[in-house]
Image (cartoon, rainbow, N blue to C red; front, side):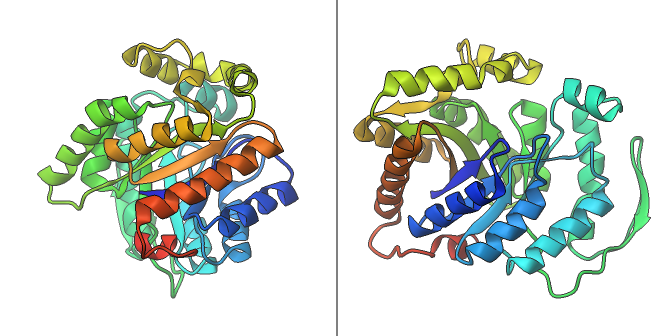
Length: 316
């Protein structure tokens, strides 16, 4: 299991790059960024990849409704070239309320939208010309970015139809607000079956997990609950919580002593997670403790052959 850090929100640029440096110093595998209404995540990935040449850099995720696949292919291939082929491109449809209110476009039938979007995007990333006409998308195009590696593509997927689409078309998925048990019983089997049905390789499962090895777990848990309260009200996440018999997304966080957090994170490896992306919680001291724990866990999971900077090579 690769272990990296997911950087969310809109902290100052220098603060994010400092976190990237800390992730690299800890010998972890990668750093991912999620797109909100602030920094552009692909630009951040390019900056991070240049600042820390040993790290895999990823997006978790780029919303598809706001970017035409031709534009996304151009930008993703440029970032891949700038980072020496260390980009992992995570994409997803976002939430219907966000898409319709912010971008002013209809967001019905997201699986259909993504199927057509990927039908255009994936060939473009491989350097192929497309002539695509679908129900939601029409494009005749080619993207010429020489000397680049095709980035792995991950799809944000939680429900069965999306998991089946991901398993049959892309390199894996990104999950969030999911327990290890839910991944083991509901996500990994369906995703793997979809990939095997079309003779595709075992897909990657990248799980974003909020975690903290905290001096005061009660305080940090309360902070996480307050910070994530709005996410629990989004329709997609509300449905996901109901399936897991949870009341809020904060209940998926792994917060406690080093021993308790290590055990909680190891459960994700046992569940089939290939890429554990930690959203660091708590104050600066808590985050430093958590990074140190992640470094130890990464070495333990990798075995005696692991050394700092080895993570991205493992993923190629």
